[in-house]
Figure 1 (tube, one colour):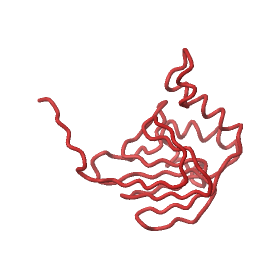
Figure 2 (cartoon, rainbow, N blue to C red):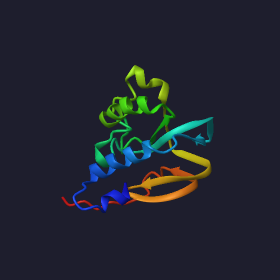
Figure 3 (cartoon, rainbow, N blue to C red):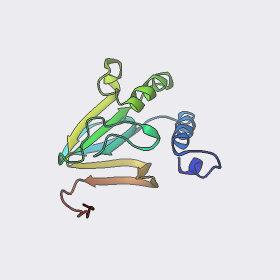
Figure 4 (cartoon, rainbow, N blue to C red):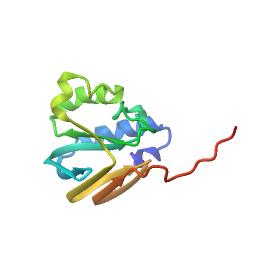
Length: 154
């Protein structure tokens, strides 16, 4: 996505769409170890995961439609490995934010709420944090209530 954003005439949402197409041409799925608030989830091959305190991100995707910035929780949504044919159906639901409620998508979704997520991978994975890309084998994501002070105009 970050590479495509530098192309002349490519918008933010277009860079995400081009990235999706590129990644569909690569091998899909990787096993992860996930812990939400210390509870380990069964390891399985995943395509992507999101830790969110807001409903949407780049390109208008809505991975966590129930996320709230003021509830003291992060919403974690993980997408299990699926066929490329299923991905073509999944992307529309993921963009609309209906993937959590559509029965056809249920086998592919793991959704949790919590304050802390630990991710371990046997090989580096691509991580995007607010548009900044990095490669990591381990992530610790934790919600820290009241950690920032904001000054707002009247």
